[in-house]
Image: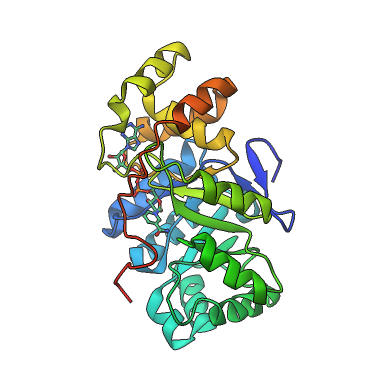
Length: 277
Ligand code: NAD
């Protein structure tokens, strides 16, 4: 993998700055076509999860793409019940089987389960040592979770995948992750279709200034802050638009202007009380 438009993780692995998220594409045919199209237009990074129920379709699309495995970056995630039962190796083995892969590039603990999130990390370290995943990380971890985990960890998480878009800029958590050598990764980077962020006057004004689309400005804002983005789209034109956000260069003063849009407006579950344990 060359290092163009990629971030280096704390174990020197490279991760493409933009990936395709495939949450809420449970229908196999649609997930297959979506991933196949994405790879054909240049995506090399796909973000799935056991709970998205589309690992098989993702795997088939990867296989049929004809792109060498080592050029792709595939993430999947450990769901909460497997964390609770401690069956981490069984869970990754099942994900690998469904994906038709020998290893994933990144395996994430999907949510910090109150009583198990520190303990489960030891099992994540074991599967990492066994080579079932090239990197291990977490998702939806707040500073308190990371502090507790880092006290016990032998391997520092490579990534923390968190909800992050301009109305929920997560400045403090992003800064904390960077200080600890953890690359933040933004889920819901476009507001998950739940806000009018694309029509925000600052975003619209900047998209005119940089001759690009609101989605591209929003994605580049995170990339410029060294935050990976995994926008979801099933439409080829939007996939291309989102991927091209890497080509825009925004002045630092404008990055700050976007960060100031923060309203601490969380759209997804709060990691401290997510309630699907
Ligand atoms: P998103 O912010 O990527 O928004 C997706 C929606 O934005 C799409 O449904 C589409 O309507 C719209 N969109 C996409 N590109 C557009 C464009 N160029 N112009 C206009 N509209 C556009 O939200 P998401 O899907 O919730 O998050 C992205 C990915 O993050 C998911 O697919 C999944 O892989 C991951 N995720 C992870 C967690 C977690 O707990 N770790 C939670 C949610 C999502």
